Image 1 (cartoon, rainbow, N blue to C red):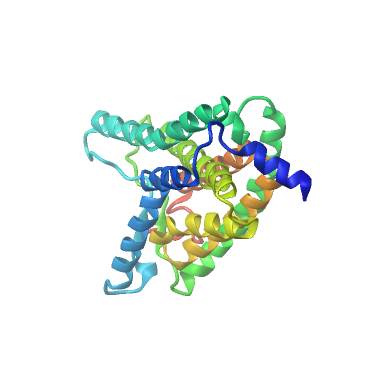
Image 2 (cartoon, helix red, strand yellow; image 1 turned 90 degrees about the vertical axis):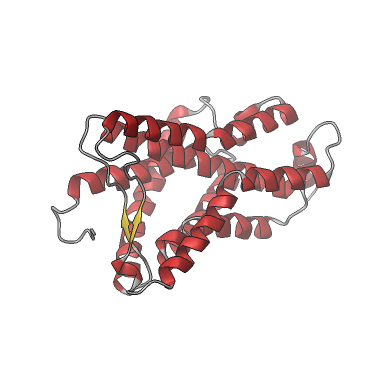
Length: 267
């Protein structure tokens, strides 16, 4: 208990930042990022539930064209969207640097252990990927999930690079904020480890609710696993690698297989 108390005390912000300021900061970061996405996903889910027809007959489009028929303008919008989605990560890095002088290194996102992060990330992705796909197919079959369309981009030269960049953006944004940053702040605010785990996992599930109940439950379970691994390793690096590989597999795999295999649902 003494060691744990010393660790928590060492993680507290320098300069006597009050709990009130930490709470306000956390709410603002979430309101600018995945907290707002959670509210948006809830509204979208309500809309899907109240629409005629079952959930599986509706589509959740993840990477769609922003300017059909105008590839260069579309590319500009795609890159703009990826860049602006990472602004909350830059804000978190600034807040952590001001707090400890280490930025995202505080959360274990750096280049000090590249091979370890890569190896662990590959193992996590391999373990979660097949189980996640099976769960999605079952959830959709029983009517608990929309048909997820990972990409519907035009067949232009930048399609696959943009899909990879989109996957990397998702991975960095979610793991930095929902795992590293949120757990750190909730711990500093006195939340118990179990309460913080539940909060982070429910948040992760909430912003996937636009996909349906399956998306919510599946990502909430994934959130529990990621929190436990982060607490064990004290690094978000492996989680970013795993998440990026999962999304790259989903985005690029769908682009290559859609309409060519019978087991993959399409709209």
